[in-house]
Length: 179
Length: 169
View 1 (cartoon, rainbow over the protein chains, first blue to last red):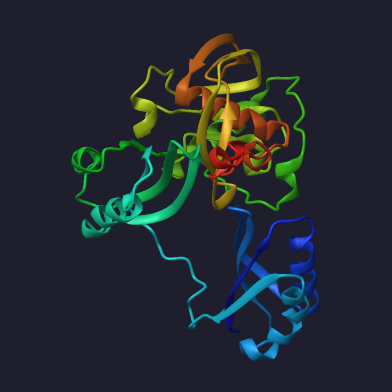
View 2 (view 1 turned 30 degrees about the vertical axis):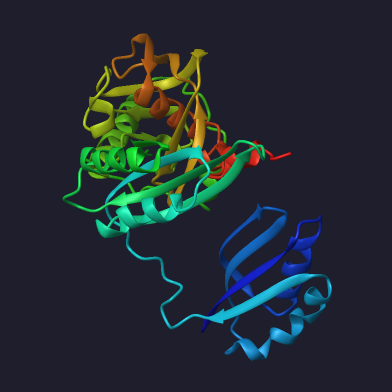
């Protein structure tokens, strides 16, 4: 049974989730994983879905036409077989906070430093706060330190970046209490 | 040694309110032993509550002394608790919890930083103990099981909560 990634975005208002999920329910779709949030003024939905009756995106894309008429943009992507299976993630989880005066390249430079060291970003949120005179950029991310990289090393790399970008960066371990 | 199977949600027994133990007989000693054995056998676990092994009675065991997190703080080692009750709590801490009965999911939970817990121990003695940090979290988590609460009922913030609270004007 193929899985699809469904992305829906549109001006936030009450009722978007119910309209979208009603279509999915009528088509017999199962929502496996999903994440939805307001970004800017847009309500953004990303869902991994599957239905025993649906083999290809064309089988059901027409059902979303009424949503498009309601100013929602709908994108469907068919996952390759196995694409719905979560990767087995290993490593120590940590949280990195980056914030400072807004300037180009904050996300890229931090992400590049992590990517170059094989550190996997598992979650990332950014937001522009402050006012127009003093815009402040805030980025929060979760990352997995692979075996062989200690938190102190990551901290030293971030310290260098902090000076280069003139932003504040802090790193802390994010241990899950297994109870 | 009797290692019991740890029940996994949606087993309905995990949502029951457990009965107080009115008589400390051999069956209670046996239950405590099973809880300890199950906790030890589960390797990563720092506590088990009776309903997690299908016994709807108010008993839990907690031992954070073998975990990496727990070792960093002062702790009481193995605690076997019958009819435990939190009689005082103070402060707040947000911790990310996972539970053997709810595999593959973790959530941020708001717990008290320090608690005072009263219970009858394995030698039938009344104990009043002050716990803090990780040990306090473990006790609160296990005691919740006795009232049919899972950490899913306590999740206090989604990861993006920080951003949601601060709305840009």
